[in-house]
Image (cartoon, rainbow over all chains, first blue to last red; front, side, top):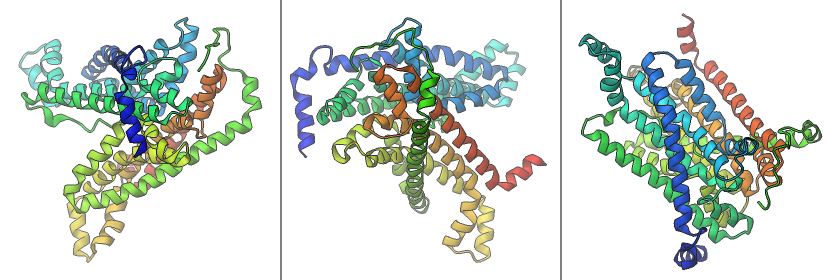
Length: 237
Length: 225
C-alpha cells in the first residue's frame, strides 16, 4: 500500500508536529472547542431537562426536541450559523462553529436528562415523598442519582457528535482537525486527507471510550449500570 | 476559502436568485432523494442479512453491533476521506459511507422487532406446521414491521442529513447549494440548501410515519378503542 506508507511518512514528518498547523495544535483546538461546546450545552440542557422531567410536564416538548434535532443536518446548522454570526458581528471561524456545536449538543442532552428523571419509578418517588422528603430532596437525593447514568449517556452522545461535527468547522474558517481533510481535498492531497481522517476518527472513538469508562467508574459502584437506555440513536455527523 | 467578503449588509435571501434557479433546485432535490433512497435500500438489504445471521446465531449479534457501532461513531467526513483514495470522488464513495451509517440503526430495530414477537404466537405457528422460513416471512416479519419501519425512519432522516456532506466529495444534492454558498460567500443558496434538506427530512419522516401507521392495524385498533 503506497498510500499507507505515505501516510506513515506524513505522521513521522517533524514538520507536521510543529506550529499552528501542526498535529498537537490542531488536536488541542479541536478538543478545546468540543469540550467547551459540550459543557455549555450541558450547563443549559441538563438543568432544564431535569427540572421539566421532575415537574412531570413537557413530554410534548421533549418529543419535539428529539424530532427537530434529528431532522436538521449538522452541516446545515454550521452553514446557517455563519450568516447569523457575521450579522451579529462575531465574524467567521470560532463563533459560528461554537454556536452550531452548542445547538447540536442541546437536543440529546436535554431529552436524555428529561427521560432520566421521568423514568425513575413512580413508586420510588412516592415512597420518598411518603418518608417526608421535600421536593428538593426528592430531586437531588432520588431522581438525580438514579437518573445519573442516563444523563451522562446524553452528554456522551452529544460529545461524540460535537467532535465529529467540529470537523466541518474548517468550512466556516475555523481550525481543528477538519483543516487537514478540507485543505487536503482542495489541493487533492490524499495523504493529508487520509491522515486527517485518521486523527478525527480516533478522537471521536476516544471520546466515546473515555465517556464509557467514566460511566463505569461513576456508576458501577452504585450498581446502576443496568439502566443505560438505548439512547445512542442520535444521528452521526 | 480565500478572502471572506461576507457583508453584514448582504440580504439573507435574494428571491431573484431562487427564481432564476428553480430548475436546478428541483434537480438537486431529486438527486438528494435518489442518493438517500439508494443508501437506505442497500443498507436495508445488508442489515436484513446481518440480522438474519444475528438472529440465527446469537453469538454474532455482539460483534455485529460492535462493528456497525464503530462505523456509526466515525465522523462522516472522515469516513468519506478514508474512501476517497480508493474509490475517488465518486457516488460509490458517497454511497459506501451513507450505507454504513444505516446499518447499526437498522440491525438493532430488525432484531428488536423480531425479538418482540410473542413466544405464544411463534409457538402457535409452529404448532400449525410453519417451517422456519415461513415462520419468519409470514409471521415474525409482518409482526415486527412497525419496529422495523421505525428504524427505517431514523435511518432515512439520518441519511438525508449526511447526503448534504457528500457535496464536499463532489456529489450532488442539496449540500451543493450549502457548499456553493460557503465558497462564494453568498447567503441565499446556503439557506436554500439548508432549509430544503430539513424540509426533505421532515417530509420523508412524515411519509414513513404514515406507512408505519398503515402497516400496524392492530395498534390502530387499540388506540381507537
